[in-house]
Length: 241
Image 1: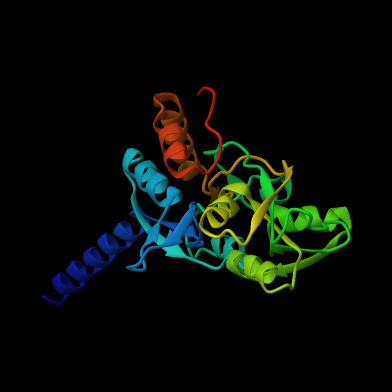
Image 2 (image 1 turned 120 degrees about the vertical axis):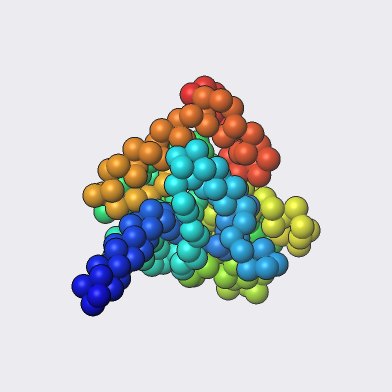
């Protein structure tokens, strides 16, 4: 009888472990609308939530969403706290040395400057950017005065309170802010930096990467990915699949 009980317990544990392995944890920041944000009920929402849910459905994966601060989002993927990053992350050679990327699910989005006035001095002033972003790296490369913040909201707040003369970020993120606040403007100057946006995975998870690559390609070819990009106004659309 004891052996039967132990056997049943072992089977239950094995089944539980198998189910846990079937869950793909989707890591995102939850603070970068319209790409990803938390809605009034605290749930992940936005372009990448809708896209991620559709990718998981097509790949027949059971996915759960995990929110993580941007500045530790890559280390916590590598350490196993979740299985993917889907957080508006541009594909760069530096990041690709640490993690693997799927094919891009949006083309490169221009980076723009938000300021209090159209004559903001970029070269002689202070430019804010979120820590660990392609925008922060770009400002540093120009030799300009850079101030970094952990969250995108803090970069915009720095402009509003006079701590910075401008903030450099994805145009899709800043455009939504300017549309609702006439005290700030977008400068005419834009930067084209970084590659398209892709999902990040551990370099060892080749099978999972292949699954997501396949369904991203499928959505490109059937037009559904362009429909989501247009709906959320996150980037330009793809010309073809």
